[in-house]
Length: 391
Ligand code: SOE
Image 1 (cartoon, helix red, strand yellow):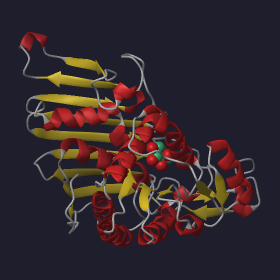
Image 2 (cartoon, helix red, strand yellow; image 1 turned 90 degrees about the vertical axis):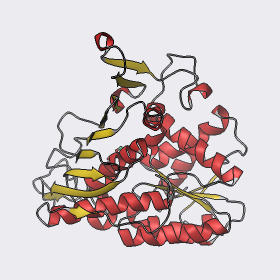
Image 3 (cartoon, protein in one colour; image 1 turned 45 degrees about the horizontal axis):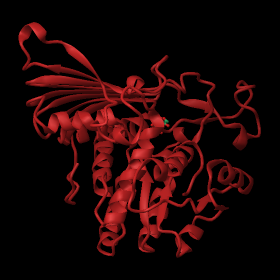
C-alpha cells in the first residue's frame, strides 16, 4: 500500500479484516506500506498492521513477493505509481478519483488494458458501490422493480471547510487534488448513480463556486500554526471548487441533478440518492446506511407508501458473512467488501469493477462539469471513453 492517511487507514482495516470474514480463494498478506516520512510510516505500519515499511514506493514494485499495489495517495501521484505497478505485472487497486486529469486517466486505462493481457487486474476504489443497500438498489433497478427510470437526485454534502481559517490543505490545491468537492465527493455520486441505474451521464450543465478564495497556509508549510493565529499566518489561493451543482441527462433517458459541496453547514458526510421510476422509487441515505426506502407503485393503491427495508438479512448483498439479521454494519464494511471483490476477481482471473475504464468515464463526466461551469453553464457533452466497459 502507498499512503497511510484516512484512506490508507480505511483500506488497511479492510485488508486486516477481509480474510477473517469472507471465505476467499486467496488470502491477503499485508507486506509493505509506503509513505514519505520515515517516522510516520513506521508508526503507521505498526498501528495499521503491516509487516514492514518503506519511504520509496518503487520498493513495492521491485519486490517479487508483492502481487498487489494499493494506491491511497493524493491524486497527483496515482498515474505514476499505477503505470509503474502495471508495467511490473502487479494487480492495482487505486483510490478515487482515478487521476487528476482525463489525460492521466486515459494513460492509466490504456496501461490497464495492456496489463490485463498479461494477467494483471486493476480496479478503482469507489467504495460506496459495496454498501449492501446500494448494491441492493442496483438489483432492484436491474430486476425492473422501478420500471423506466425518470429521475435521479443525488447530493453529497460536507462542511469541513466552512471556517475560512481552515488551512489550505492538499485537497484545496488543484495541482495535488485535481479538483475540489467535484472530484472528491461529486465523483462518488456520479459513479454510484451510474452503477445503480446502469445508465451513463451523456451531458451536463454546471455551476461551480469557490466561496473562500484565500486560506492560511497549513502550519507545516508556513512554520506557523495557522489555525491558532490565522490573522498573521501567510495565506495561499484556493485553486479548486468548494461546491459543484449540475443537471445531467442519462443515456437511458433519465434526468438527473447532482450537488457536491463542502459548505453544507451541518452536513458532515451526507450522501443521499433518490431514484424515481415508472413503477416505484428508491432512496439511500448514508447516515442510515443499513436501510433502503422503497416505494412500490404496483401495490394496491391503499397500501402504497415508502417502506423501510433493513438491509441486514443473509440474502442481502454481502450480509451473510456478517452478523445475524438486524445487527447493523458501518462505513468501513464497504471497504472490506471492496477488498473481498478485488481478491475474488484477481484469484479467479476475472476483471474487477469498477475498472479503470469505468473510472475514466467518471473522469470524463468531471471534465464535462468543469468545462460547462467555465463556459457559463453551457451544455457539455461527456466525451466517449473509446474503451468498452460495463458500468
Ligand atoms: C473527504 O472529503 C472524503 O474522505 C472523501 O475523500 C472520501 O472519498 C469520502 O468517502 C469521504 O470524504
